[in-house]
Structures are given as C-alpha cells and as structure tokens.
Amino acid sequence: MKKSYSSSLNRRSFLRGLGVCLALPTLESVAPLGKALGATQESLATTASGMPLRMGFVAFANGSNYQRWLPKGEGRDYELNETFAPMQKLKDKFQVITSLAHITANNWGDGPGDHARSGASFLTGVHAWKTLGSRLQLGISVDQIAARQMGHLTRLDSLQLGVEGTRLYGSCDTGYPCAYQYNISWASDTLPLSPEPNPRIIFEKLFGAGTGPERQDNLRERLERRKSVLDFVLEDVHRMNRELGRNDKQKMDEYLSGVRSLEKQIEKNEQFKLPDSSMPEPSGIPESHEEHVDLMYDLMAVAFQTDSTRVISYCVAPEGSNRPFPTLGIAEGHHFLTHHSGNQEKILKVAKIERWYMERFARFINKLDTMQDADGKSVLSNSMIVYGCAIGDGNRHNHDNLPVVLAGGGGGTMNPGRHVKLSKTTPMTNLYTAMLNRMGVKTDKVGDSTGALEDV
Image (cartoon, rainbow, N blue to C red):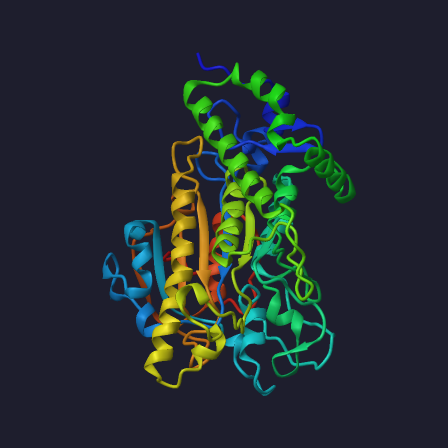
C-alpha cells in the first residue's frame, strides 16, 4: 500500500529552512491541494484529476509580419508558416487562433498612440484614453480577475514578469501616460502591476520566506555563508524521501537539480563586475538578452511546476520596443523596422526577430511539456498559455487579425493541434472568458467580451 505524508505535510506541500520556503512539484504521495482544502474548492483552478490548472499570458511587441505568421489551411489539416518553424515539433501542443481582435486598441477619436493603447488593451479589453498626464483609468486585467478568486490557493496570487523594465510615470507614445504602454497587468482601473525584470527578485519571491526585508537578510546570510537555498531544507528533504515512492523520488531529484541550476545561473550574473559609469548593470540581470528572456521563462516554468502561483503574465517586450538585435546582425531597432513600408530588407529583418522570439517561446513550451504532474500528464497539458499581441500587422497597426497562440491542454478541456479560423471578427476577451470558465472563476465579462469562445 502506497504511503502518504502526514496531514500537516499534505496541507503545506513545501519545505522549510532558514529563510527558505521551497514549494514542491506535484507528487503522487502528496494529496492534491483541492482535497486538502475541502470539496468546495476542488473545481477552482484544478483539473478533473485534482492537479493545479495554470494560466499564463505572454505578450510580445509591435505586431507581426502577418504574411509569415498566418497558417495555411484550417483545422488539424494545416501547415505552420515560417515564423512557426521552431514550433513544428510541438504542433500538437498548441493551437493558432485567427480573427481575434482588440477593437479597444483602435483610435476612438483620441489620435495616434497605437502602442500605448495596445499594451493597455492586451489583457484588459478596455480602451485607454489619452489624458496627457498621470491620471489613469483603465480596467482590471484577466490575470487579476483570476488572481482575486483563486490567489488564496497558492503562496503567490500571481506573478508579473518582464525583461525591459517598466515605467509608471511620465508621458509616452504621443501623450499617453507611460503606464499604459509598459504594464499589461492591472489590479484595478487605476493600479498597474509592474513586470519585474530582475530574475533574482523573482527567485526570492518563489524560494525566499518572510517579509521583503527579512528575505533580503536571509539572502545576504546565504550568500555570506555560500549556501544554496537547498542546503537549508536538506533535513526536510531526507525526512520526506523516506515517505516517497520511486517515481516521486526521481521527480524530486530532477526538480531540486533544476532549482539549483537556476540558482547557479543567477549567482553567475551577480558576480562582481567592473562598474560601468554610464549604465551600471542591475544585480541579477544577465548581459545576454537571450539568456535574460530564457531565464524569465524558466522562472515562469518552475513557478507553475511548484504551484507557487497559477497565474502569470510575462511581457517579453513592451509595446513600441525598439531594441536592436546585434547577435542576429540587426543594428536597427525592432519598432523602427516594423514600419517597413514594403521594404524587403526591413521585412526580412523583422521576420528574423519574430523567429527569434518564437524560438524562445518554443523552448519554454517544450520545458513545460517535459515537467510531469502527479497525474502522469505534463505541466503543459494542465496549463493554458496565451502568446500574442494586440497589434495585427506591425506595419499597418491594425487591431484585428491578431497573432495569437494558445498552448496547453487546459487539463483536458482544450483541443490543441489545430488552426482555429473563426468565421467572424471576435473580441480577444472572449478567449479570456473561456479560459476563466475553465478555471472555475466566476465573472460576467472581461473588458469588451461578448461571450465565451468555446471552440478552443
């Protein structure tokens, strides 16, 4: 007969040590969280098998080279276009949805500013009006609608990740408050939640314990003693291993090795460097943009694996991002190139940048697919991950025919492996409503939604 943890371990499902709170991956030997909380919670953010159901949103910038994005054919009998080449081996793990729109990002008489309106609309479905100042009025985003109702199930109600930082104040994009352009998550009509670009801070949120100042003290002590977070939970690990079956022991070994690998990668970036007086390097942020993007994806994956949170938004580039890509041989800024006016040289450079971003996303999806939940399915199978933008074609700045990918199986409630070509233009927020329904989150609507998009 299979052993199980004591009721106290069932309830907490994490390891403790000096200033450390290390969440566990889902294990066969540990009772599912839904059962630990009682039957009334079992349908909220869980799958039919009792596993955590995760929801993620990844926003990229500046629209797409749509002719290289749009799939050929429909349903399961379709061909991925060239932008999706890195996703070819994962074709049965996601679906491409076309004809979605964010009409709230259109110009409603307030002039230019498509990038600010797009960033603001992406997860809210609400139009951002140009106020020429710091006064904000938008709406709660889909991730925060979910976090309000299911945040109590996890250590962190949600996470907001980024790469290029954020701006809460000042004027951007033809007079729009910068907060609209740089923040995709909104806790209320007036409160944006800034995406965190420093992987060390996210790591401490996931694996540190105590208040902010306490976590800083604990981190300092670990660094001074040259200790890993794992060194402080070894006693708990040894005690737990006596209760685990062979499969769970192997899973724990793999998980702990992954945590240490992440920790080493961050520590490498925090080693002493000669100061650069013009632009000092923030602690914990890699010099390589590719490594930075991947590291934030890795933290997103481990946060889902450990059930530290079930809701994450990740802004891989804020709207209007004009980052050059010298490693791709591209000196011009991304935003500048998207205004190509048919110039083939610029179009090919944009295509190369979009392919690079898709490679990063494919790596992340593959990582989730290799992480196994206690029900034998992958973390990806028990997730819903949106990858998209509120601008369709980067040159046209249209807000219909949006480039949208929905990855994961939604705990068996979704039908990946298809190109879903909708018969008419449909609010993007209808997709969000359908995702919330699958999470068991009750809401009348999201932004400008008109119903739930059920064929996903």
